[in-house]
Image (cartoon, rainbow, N blue to C red; front, top):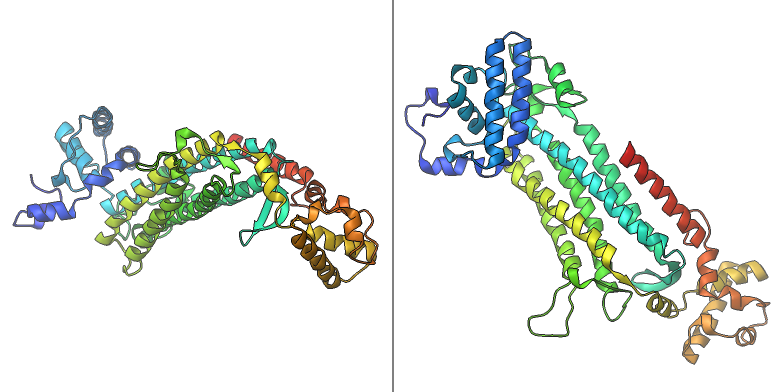
Amino acid sequence: MAKLWGGRFKEESSNLLDMFNASIGFDQELWEQDILGSVTHAKMLLNIGILKKDEYEAILRGLEHIKDQIQKGEFEFKIADEDIHMAIESALIALIGEAGKKLHTGRSRNDQVALDFRLYVLEYNQIIRTKILELMEAILGIACAHTQTIMPGMTHLQHAQPVNLGFHLVAWCANFQRDYWRFSDSFIRNNYLPLGVGAMAGTPYGNDREMMAKELGFSAPTLNAMDTVSERDFALDLLYDISMLFMHISRIAEELVLWSSYEFKFITLSDAYSTGSSIMPQKKNPDVPELLRGKSGRVFGNLIALLTVMKGLPLAYNKDTQEDKEGVFDSIKTTLISLDILKAVIATMKIHPDNMLKMAKIGHLTATDLADFLVFKNHLPFREAHHITGVIVAYAEKKGVDISELEEEEILQLTSLDLHGVKKVLDLKTSMNARNSLGGTSSMRTQEQIQILKKWINEKKNG
């Protein structure tokens, strides 16, 4: 079959070239966007007098027929057609004849693919944002029930200060809120129409790009034709947004792995989202969090791959850019299933508050409270209070108990300072609730944070 672009060629292209050059094996994913763009382009051509009414209507009928064939799985994608654009155009010409040949007037595959790919990226940007909100809702639902569930807050993976589980879960959601903002910002930044700029310098047909932008839901047409067909910032933005999202998912997955271990035993993962060992019958492995942690490397790789493709290209379209899609398709697919399964894992895990409290009694988590108490009660410089607290911690260590378990009389014997009332200060719950500054871990502040996030989520869902 002769190529649609083959007029100046005397020899047929080799089968090896066809296989190497073709993108139809993966860019057929863009069929829906390609048809949508063609319908809009045809309407514009009718408006500016390139198409007659009967030609326009024939094109619409033909494209609708092709759409129906693809949806039913009856459309044949051929390597000889190279890409989704040529596949649909060739099928259209075969269906309706001469009118189909007019559809490509005033456009190039360069701006056509820029449109299809951008529409696809923007569509999935919105879908991913919706799933982020759903994940946050699931996490906040658990956080609401655990604003008084005490657990050890950690720095350097060492016991630091008592916090409540709800507070820790809100911290996860704060990450995801920034991810949502990041996707939202990049959507706004990239919501511009590339169609109608031609190969790289515009067209002589008077394309009504403003009309097409409005028709397709873009904010406006892009500014410069050469830049439009050259850039893939919209795809890179999505890959970066996904990479940041997975960095956060990976950190949460690491905590789920730790928390589900016998050493922590803060949670038990559902059997539905765990696996066993082929050799050790007793094992219950946290494979889902581990896979989530591992998939971060995969999406990071897709970002770096496209950055590497783009970094050396001169302006206007280059065939290297064909390598832009598979990594994006893969990252999107990975993101969608990962967000769904992370939500399911979190929603079905069993929480063990008793074990969390037990672990909070290890490591002298209220030592900072004692130092603060010395500052307030005896007007000491904090450094001096820090030293005295260290002496009392050493005493508790020698006795083999946590500082919160010391009796007040014992502590009073260790210093001549006024420490009456210190026992209450060293209580884990008192310590947690004492951190009542804006953004703090007290139950009241945690509930406040949950309500703020819930209100924000509702605004985004209903806005």
